[in-house]
Image 1 (cartoon, each protein chain N blue to C red):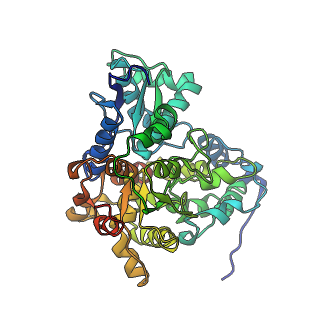
Image 2: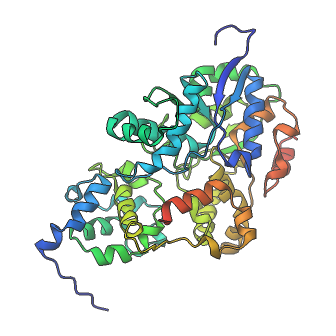
Image 3: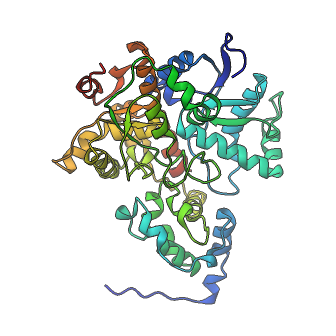
Length: 299
Length: 139
């Protein structure tokens, strides 16, 4: 970790949703990293990552947005950067892998971006915050920073799709990842078994097919409830929106549906590190997390 | 209801099949129809044609049935099928190639009508939802 008196600097890509509906994810990321003596520096002039990786082999156009961000990282004199959004991570990382493998695609993109002073050469690494916490900081070291252990809190860790698929971007097991469980344990909480942890939430169907999200939310949150979880933690603002804000639709579909709060893993870190309400922003949730936390003597 | 399907070698070797393979980067004939993709698909309950059936229709070059399937707009590219396929076929890429075929036709056959959403609904949805829905379903 280098000189212990000097905070580490890390380039941070927040992504669009962390500056809108998911501001709780943004502020809890920055606050909890400060407690870990890592100063996150927001990437200058970042743009939307494109949100989804185009699966068509000849769709070069959709690689332009992520590659532009990789250029901005180079311009910040950095060779790596971190994002806490699972969707941004996946899109940026896949575009990076793709252009590293395909010199012709990279050349086309650089030609298209002729007004950029910096050319991209596949020389930036994309990191997800969970990966950074595990591999650079270490959960043992992270546990030392805990001021308010989350003792007794039962947490279901939901990965969704984008942290674990495809294999090339996964930094943990594709079928049974454990990185979030290990983080939660370091914070003093108890991870519960969660068979639905890598099942899709329905993603963008929330725009015009909310009935699909209701069915998915019922199944995923129902499984967490069966495991007697107090709450579900996520790393994706689209999963968070669907699993939190679509719970009323799930209730209409299944009258036995049980409401559960959905938090970002960074909010649990901020809570355990003793950060105040401005780092948590529970006011942005549909299902208020406070009763679940009060129930465990944590709020 | 009885459906009659006419299979011919002309369809199997058609430009449509070649284009699907080119956009998806997949060899359609690698699939031996084990059905594992459909068994694990979280969207299967909402589909009219299951993922393994989509691949079979693609192998046979059944263009009209494929492009009219609701399923191609239901697949959200969660990649569960890709990660479990014993032949390492990227099934989600084949779904994407089918969507792209419709969206690139020049007919502006978009499958998302943003203008039909209320301003309230648009305001509530996070950018990540709107952008991904538009990227996947509009030309």
